[in-house]
Structures are given as structure tokens and as C-alpha cells.
Image (cartoon, rainbow over all chains, first blue to last red; front, top):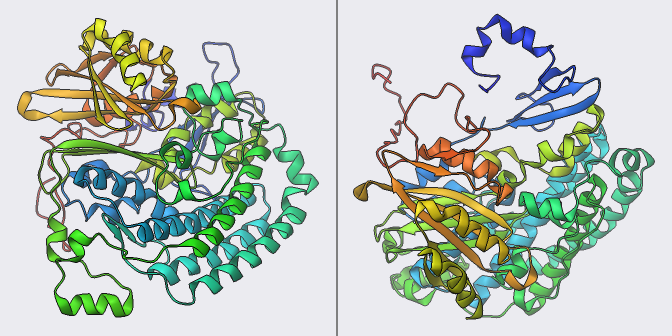
Length: 411
Length: 160
């Protein structure tokens, strides 16, 4: 079948008849195109086939913000790919670049010092909270709950601000680099972070009253868009969407990277697999992330934030600057990182789920091939699976509960 | 490592080359004809989903390497990724689809068809996914596709 949006179909008068015709299975099917200019999310289109108001099939038509990042990466030095990849998911920049950096570090045979691993974990968890709040807000507005949208986006600002205090940038931090991180912990950071956590704990109770336990939200979310563990495994779903179906899988426990092996945290799961379960898992993850931030700030070890091998290359004056300000300057040779020929894979748990990187190096200063599989791309199949047989009015609820982020899916 | 031995035992009768690239990363390469059998064996060993399907264009060898990265949701196999790969000729890149074994390969195979021009025989919807529907050029992730980067001022006289 040719894609309904293709130009040959648009010029074909039969295309319009087909829209309201019967399909091979005898359904009296109406085809409805939602997007790509969608009021809540945008950048994607859903082609919905309806029988009455029952969804026969919903096909995600993605790629509107595709940039062929994998190709662009082949033309850039290893370091320059970090700012490129973080633009796939700017709301979760630390986590999406961490996977890449982990793979590059394996190729270079490099390990970040412990303090740097803790700082990475700290930013990753701040990003996770911000990412969940972003998805929370979008899910709210898709149910016409504009208060939840305003609240979640407003409270996300707290975490974005915290990330800025740590890294100097609101969203695209480029904080995690091979061999370490780019800035040390600011002096007053712990105080600010604890204040943010106290605030968020209170706000989560407000959310519960106005949104989670709201009878309207319960009616729209409970038993809507159900996926069970077996099916979620079969389709290769990741992230909170998978854990809400009862599968206890998380790249943080699977790969044991960063400071996670030394932290005490739970992987929240639920059995129901419906939209409500996905929401509740995310809320639980926000709580876990806040507990992890507290632990990190309590037991973060002292020491360097950048690998000795490269730090040694800095001229004395720059070393002095780094010591005084806690801001790293990179040695000139760092741009020409040259890993041995070979390949490496890495997985990192983002807010949306697991991101996968596979890097093939031919020994040059640019990667020969970089493969990125983002959680949004792995979850896109849920549009098809969850919507079949649902009422059309449930589509926004399902759409919002998946927490799909189009630029991340498209790359 | 017990798992590595298990994979060796199961897959070496197919003529597979099994090696551990790094801890937790096992590479299995087979002939194109044995891909489905190898996938079924890996599936029965517990690798229940694919994380990625991809192609690497080895233009000097005139071959494309098609690689499936399989992983598992089972706790005892957490942290292990198996790369199942094969090399096929660049000018006739055809392969049987593995979606019957791993339904999670549905979208990634479609993407690999689009980005590297690999035809997965038996795949139900090899159609454009990420590129525009009227895209005409060669598959962009092949090495002979050149990315033309524009400067700040675009040269309007240059033909596309």
C-alpha cells in the first residue's frame, strides 16, 4: 500500500472515494487524519480508521522532524556528536547523551572518576523528573485538564533551574563527556536541591487531589489502553510503559552504570497495564528519583571530575582556572579522540525508557557508524496496539499516557 | 562464562562464529540463509526481543552487514546483548524478515529498509517511515550517499 499522504494519491480522485469506502474485512471504515499540526504534541500524524467511533486501526505516521542523525554523526568528530544527539530529546539531554558517552568510553578504554559518575547520576535523575513532569503536563492537556498542564510545566521549571545551576544550561547541557563531566558541584547546590525536593513532595500531593484521584481522570484512564506483560515483552516496549504492564526491567539495574549500584532505589511496577498504571508508575519514579538525589548529595565522594589522562594535558594556567571555578576546560587534543577499531554498545534508562547506542569505529577520528534506538521509537508501535478496538474519545488519553516524544522517535 | 558456552553449543552447528566482544556483549555472525534458524535458537535461549535492527555499509568489501541486537527481559539475562549479524552483497541486499521470531523488529526492519535499502522478504509493510513519502534519492545511510551541508548563506544557483 502506498502511504496515504504521498503525492500520487493526493492527485487521484479515487483516493477520496476510498476514504469512505468499505475495506476488505467488511468494515464500514472512515479514515481520519490527525495532525501533523496537533494542538497538544505536534510533529506527527496518526491515521485513524474508524468504524462508528470504534478505532479499527491507528497508524502512527512519524518522521516529520527526522534529521538522519545517524548519518550526520558519521561526519562529526566523537565529541561533536554529543550536542547533536542531545537535540533528539532536549528535555532529557543528560540521559540521551550518557548512552553515547558510555559507548565511546568503552571504545577508548576509559572510565570516569567516581565523583564524575555521581554527578552524572545526579543530572540524570534531575532530568528524569523534568521529563516525567513534561509528559505529565502533555497527558493533562490531552484530557483537557489545563490546570495539570500549567502545574506540571511550572513545576518542571524548578528542575530545569536546578539543572542550570549544575551545568550552566537549562536544557542542552552537554554536561557528560567522555572521561568525566564539565562542571563541579556548586557550593549551595545541596540546599537548593533539598528545597526543590520538599516543594515537589508537597506538589505531588496537590497533583493527587486535583488529577490522579479526580473522578473524571479515573473514568478516562482506568482500563483504557491496556497492554499486559506478555504482549509488552513481545513488542519490545521499554520504560514506564513496560513497567506499568508488570515487567520489572530497567536499564539502570540491567547495566549497572554510573552510581546506581551504590544507591538504594526501587523499580516501581504495576500489573494493570492501563493508562492509569502508566501515570502512577511515573509518579512513583519521580519519588524514587528524589530519594536518589538526596542519597547522591549525601555520599558524593571527593576527587577529580575528569579523567587524569586528559586533565594532565591542560596548561598550568588552565588547570588553575579549573581548580578555582570548578569549570572544566578541554585540552585541544580532546576534539581528535581516536578510539581503536572495534565496536561497543551501551544502554541507558531515560525518562521515556531505554536508549540504545551501537558505535562502530574504524580507528578514525569520526565514528564509522552510530546506531541510536530511542525509547520513543521502540514505543511507537503502541499507537497501533493500544488503540485497536478503543473508542475514538480514548485516543487522546492513550496518546498522552504513552509519553511519546516525536523528535526522539524521529531522530 | 556459562551463557557464552550455551550460545556456542546451540549456534555453532549452524556454522556461526560466536565471540564475546566485551563483557555483556556477544557477537554471533552467520550466513544469510541461517539467520532465521539462529534467531529462533537465540529466542529459545531467552532473548525475547530485539533492541535494534541496523545495517552497516562496508563499501570497500561491497557488502552490507545486517545486525540484530537482541536482549532479554528475564532477570538472569539482564545486561546481556547479543548481536546476530550477517553480511549480504551490496548490490543485492535481500534477507528474510525475522518478525515472526521477534515481532519487535517490525519498525526497525522498516527503518533499515528505508535507510539502507535492505529488502526484508516477507515484511508486510516496507514503506516510507521517517523520510518524506516522495523521497527519491539513494538510501541515506549508505556510504556513497554524501551529506551536503549548507553554509550560512544558501547558494540558490546550485542545482539540487
